[in-house]
Image 1 (cartoon, rainbow, N blue to C red):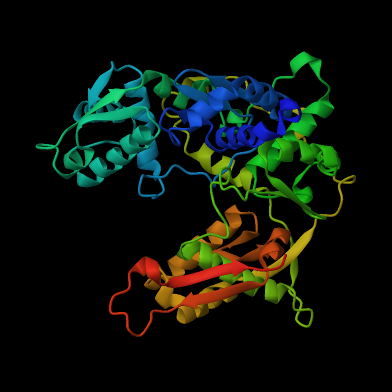
Image 2 (image 1 turned 90 degrees about the horizontal axis):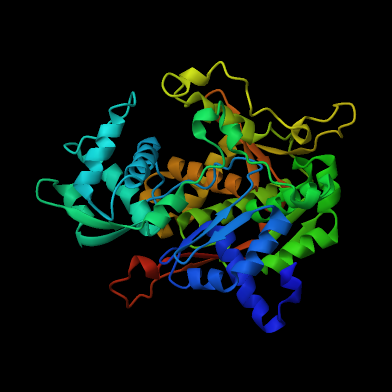
Length: 469
């Protein structure tokens, strides 16, 4: 492992490079910033070898791009594409993005926005239920969002004009883009030919076994991958052999040394704490209404869970959410078109031996977790809104149910709780152990001084801090 041999004065620089490539997977001359690619190139040899040894990942570095090809052990619904205004991509925007990449792969060095739109519109004509009409403002907005995603990563560079002008009125507005072909080709590099897949589970790659290394090395890599890819690695979620590996101090210490992060161990599992902010895609605790209300709600939940005089009922954890996600994505595969001729081929994406469930008789009893009724959650968020609502962002002051949904989704993504679905919406929440880390929230609300006549939104708000673990 190269990190052990790097001089202590340079180790921090190396660890920053490791965090950047793990967080972004694609680094270009402008994305995520202009210093990232030179940093990766400085340590390319060491990073390439350490990433392969520790995680089974492959790193390709060129003069203009750095591309990490991870081994996916599970699908993750918590990292959606977002617009430049931080709105989540919907299905239409994902479709436009995919078709725009296909069109750019056949284009020259430059393309106008209207030309790209015409090519994508032609592709949509072959797909049932999808079209792109430049006459519709909603279609133009969605298409510009997809193009903006590509431009943000350096696949396209605006040479002239304005995409916003085209989105407002394509008859008078136009934009000309330079195409960075290496970036276009680096963005979409699936591990397998999509036409040969019968399930999105086939995208879960199998790592190579360099030099015939034993299966124990593969298990160690899976555990290390979990540490850098998930907010919390719960022992309950691992196979028995992986639980034993997670308990090894050396395995966790290697990831700490490589990333510069600090591990917090508990009986239930391990979490890497990113105080640098360079690896986490979601900072928590953090600024903004959602993060602060989430922390306030966590404090209320922790008080309820720790109330020994009124114990909460317990329930076992729900089925693996990845199973539900795979089923939802498989339902969207257009088997009526390109996949139809492959329907009778042997299924090549079957589970390998490591994924076959253990004998139920040998498996330990499943853990149970405190259960909260969702009505209590809704009432508590409403009470928080009544108390602190004047400090909330305007959109959430008028939409407390929406605020509740988003806050719960954030906490579920952070693996602090699990949503138990019901017949007509969420039934309740299962409270996972890592939530206790944020108990004891202290709230300070800044108020404007009496002599102030004007106060900006940035000058008011609830600042929330944590104390105690």
